[in-house]
Image 1 (tube, rainbow, N blue to C red):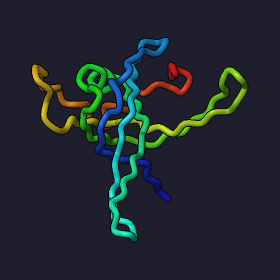
Image 2 (image 1 turned 120 degrees about the vertical axis):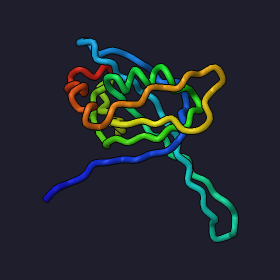
Image 3 (image 1 turned 90 degrees about the vertical axis):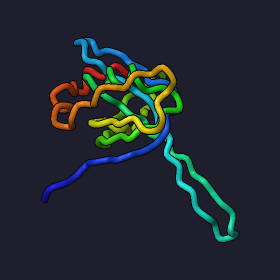
Image 4 (image 1 turned 180 degrees about the horizontal axis):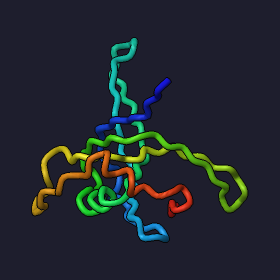
Length: 138
C-alpha cells in the first residue's frame, strides 16, 4: 500500500532564518514558523493556540529562504515530516520533529526596498540537493 508524507503550513517566522553549509558545501537553512488556531470555548470565550514548527530547507531553496525571509514574514511551506534523535553532551537522548521544505512561497506585502524573490525550485528539483543525515550540521 502506498503512503504519503506531505505537510502544508501557512504561518509567520519567529526569527530570521539561519543559513549554514554542510561539510561538503550544501546550503541548509533552518527557521521556525508559528501557526495559530482560534476557537470559541464552551463559555463563549475566544481561545487561541500557537503551534511552532521547525523548518529545514536545503540547496537553492535554503539560499532563497536565507536571503528573502525575515522575522515576521508570512510564508506558505510544503514539505515532509522528518524525525531524528541524538545524544547531547550530557548523554541525554534528544528528539526533534522537523518539516523538510520542498516548496516555499512568500505571502503578504513585501517589505520596503525589497526586491521580488525568484521562484522557488519545484519539489522535483529539491530532491537531489538533500544530503544524507550524516551531513546535517545541527
